[in-house]
Image (cartoon, rainbow over all chains, first blue to last red):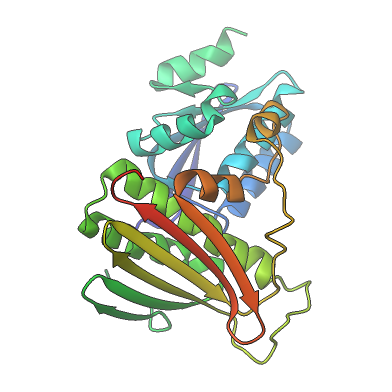
Length: 116
Length: 159
């Protein structure tokens, strides 16, 4: 099992956050704290790279749409990148992909904000 | 998989008993163990992912609600533990999750429509929907002797 990790790599005005491990009710407060800190600094362009993520529970998904909503109120967004197929199938089935934007390349995800 | 000492696991043919502290840090172990068993029984990877998520939602509810520190427990003499009994019954995987915390009014709980929640971008209220949609049966029973038991069934072949 991978240890949950959050690594932030800013790309200009876009905050790229690489997630590793499981985003469940135990780990999501750590991401919540990170996103709250970014929002307090006025950073509302966020891309979450999920390539190394092996699980997302409803606590994590709920938090993500809550943050996406908050970011959109400030003309930003929280977008997903490289979502593993196993997780993508689940979040698509539940309808979360109707609300959260998902990208397959880092360039696309970052450029989607630059185009704004 | 190496398990922490305070996870107790007993396994016999097609049956598994698991006992863990009722704390969020053990959820990843529970998911991994249940997922491995579901795979061995013959569920494909997409169904395994659904089973793991349903079990995770159930156990998260135990940690978050049944053993919530701000609620008075019904059975304070018990240790806050989660007990899982998982077995194969023919073509069905039966998972029973037991706790001795605050009981949940399952019969009267009416979750709001998930489409509405998503449209409004609500943060919570998805857990029970996930359990009911990813498993074929979900039942909840609570009494003073045995505590609270959530029973979920997943069929290998669709009923």
